[in-house]
Length: 67
Image 1: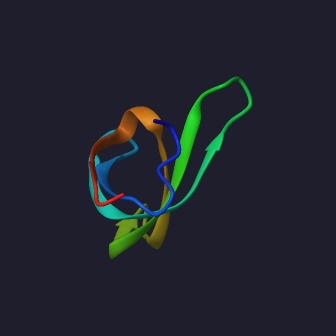
Image 2: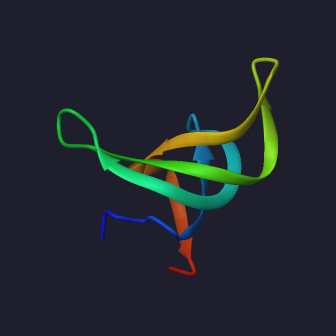
Image 3: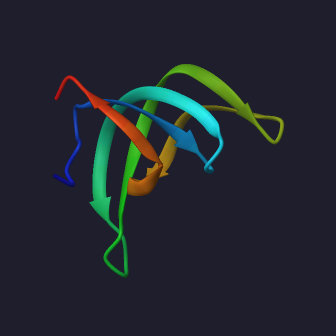
């Protein structure tokens, strides 16, 4: 299952920053890989900027809840 829209997920942004939130969009990128836009439950700070939404590659999603 590649389309995770409206699913709650947890994962690791940039491979190491733990995040949790609701997937608002799933799409196939050029080249065939899948990525997901995640609206975070709690904002994170990355390189001095606050992020309320991140894009996770499919391999960065660790658990899927409530689809």
